[in-house]
Structure formats: C-alpha cells, structure tokens
Image (tube, rainbow, N blue to C red; front, side, top):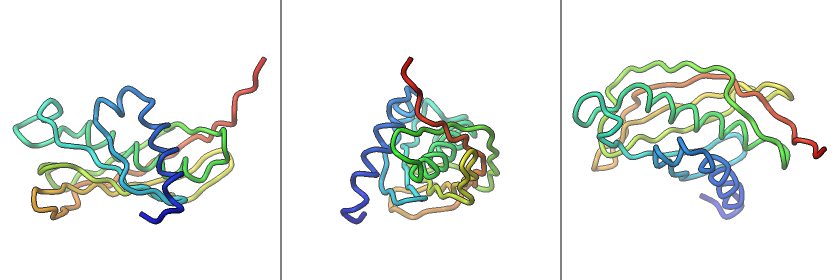
Length: 147
C-alpha cells in the first residue's frame, strides 16, 4: 500500500465495518486505491458447510463487500452506496487459511456503478487459488439532507 491510499483505506474500512455482518465475517482491508480494494476474511468453521470449506453465502458476501467498497472509493465525500444486485460464480472450493477478494469498478456512473471482485482461497503458505468471481451493481446514494 502506498502512503496516499492510507486515508482512503481507513475511510472504507470504517464505513464497511460499521455494518454488523462485516464485523461478524471479520473482514480486514489490506489495500485501497480509487476504484480498487483488497479485502480478506478468515475461513471460520461457523461459516463452513463441511470442515474447512466455506459455504457459498460467505464467498458471495466477501465478493459483495469488496466490489461495492471499490465502487464506494470513487464517491464524493458524504455519499454512500448499497448493493442493488449481484451474482457469484463459484469454480473452486473456498478452503484454506482465508479468502482474499480484489474488488474493482467496471463502470462508474452517477446513479449506478457496475463492480466486480475476484475471490481467492489462500492456503497456509500464502498460495492463492481463484475460487469465485462476483459481479454486481451498486446504487450511489447522495448525502441525506437534514430536516
């Protein structure tokens, strides 16, 4: 991570970790740049459908958080975003020490942003295996006005 990305990383991590689900998944932001983030989560037995292998729901959630956070990294201060829709394609078991998702913006619009994430299973030696790709749409939400 370069020093100029530290404030963006802290801002995105604070916004995402304000959500109880993100804290439950124990998400950790590794890197952030405009339009791109890297997020990691441990593989916890509580989220596995068989010992050491994550259920698809947890894989989907990590891809969602990474992709939508990447889209959020391009928003003006005070703006937020939320997932409108998403899909995940699984092609390898999500097992190892953790999952790492690299989120990116495909197309940033004023109302909707298309975003994606590749999700990697990381073993104890740090070797990554691509296990899923997430693609979705985030709705950009302007700041709420005080009444």
